[in-house]
Image (tube, rainbow, N blue to C red):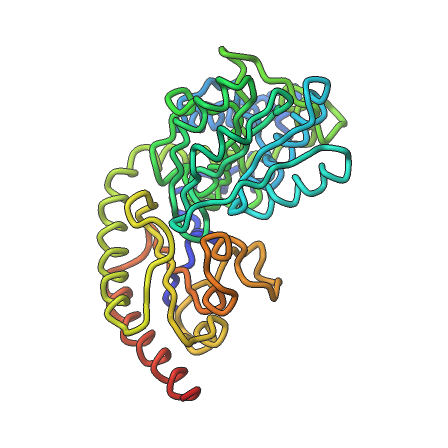
Length: 381
């Protein structure tokens, strides 16, 4: 199997798994226990918290461990909505956000909040003028994804954060597809809230973190989703997943060390794959080609159903959208927001490479894709 679906999840790095194993076997204590055994687990959590903080240039007290980005998004948006509603009940987000953000916003609309869902331009980038016109005195939060999970489009987060702060609102970015792949500095970018997930950068599933700013320009207060013990500074109660947190920390440390090398190598393979696929007639790239993550390409294959393409590529793992919406029979909301028709949106595939992708695999993919595409087009002629 050739795996080209790394935006859905990455394979755990063997070096990460090696560091996790002792906390699944011998060092199994509860990190909240006060005996020596528990204190050892607590120390491991402290180290991991520092490793995550180092990756994003935050302080350790600004890291809240979660089960992943979906929980982090829920905690951030609902936590702000609950705690800042006396200031206002207006939230701004973007039509191309992950379903975790959009679904939370729709839920809050049932609770009396007003949400503005901003459109994007045909290349997937947010029009700054549209954002400025949408901000209001009662806007309490703006949430704009750093890297889109389907197209890899990178938003100008620094500029967006500046505009949001000038309006007196908080700024969140869903950095799930960015952290561990791109340099992300929460101070330089002006981020107030930022969820991340370990399994997107070679760590384990079921663990992530939420950055919650505790320094100037403000100390953000969140209403907790989970109560029952006051863990994580009262923001997220529950017994800590020590092994998972250790894995997240090691994955963060490796990402910081190897990011430059990974970027160059994976980017070269992506470009090789993309350029070859674009030699097939009736293909084009979705999203901005310049402001885009180096590991992903989303390509339209005219006249081909994406599900049929995936079924035809029996030994190649690719995607026709977000793994979190794979059960939906609707076309990608991201691609529709780009201006594609429903038929066009149903004709697109996402190829996402990773640390363990190989050149020989990429070379073998193009010929197989061409054969399947030509076969499907021949059937409808």
